[in-house]
Length: 156
Image 1 (cartoon, rainbow, N blue to C red):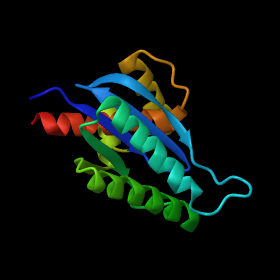
Image 2: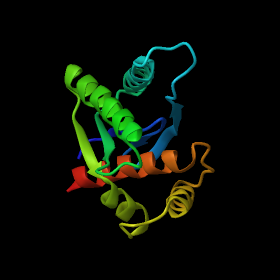
Image 3: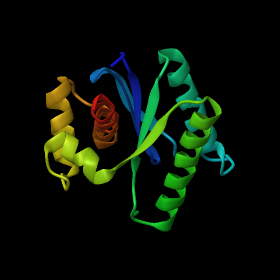
Image 4: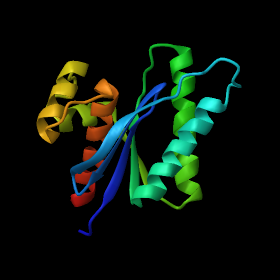
C-alpha cells in the first residue's frame, strides 16, 4: 500500500479534525464553526470549506473520512451536521478526492474496542495512542479515530 495522508473530520459546531499519515498523527485540532454576531447563516459553512481546502492543499490529503451520525440531540444539531457533511462531500467531489462516512460505533470500536465508549474513554485512548494532550477535547479525539478507521479499512 502506498503512503496515505488521511483527513478525519468530526462534523459539528465544534468540528474536530485530524491528519494521519500511515496511521501516525501529523496534526489535529478543532474548528469553531459557531455562528457569530452579524453573520449570515451560511458563514459557518464557508469557514468549514475554507478550513478543509487549506488543510487538503497544504498537506496533499489523499482521502477524507467523516463521522456518520444517525441520531442528533436536536433538530438544530442535525441541520448543522447535514450542512457540514454537504460541504465535505461537495468539496471532495469538486476536487475528485475520495471520501467515506464512518459510523459512530465503528469509530468507538477502533478507539477502545467497545462500540459504546464515552467521551472520556475516547480522549484517554487518543492521548495514550498518540502520546499527546488534546487541546480540542473529544471532538479532536473522535477525528483522530475517524481517520484511523479509514486508514485501517484501506489497508485490507
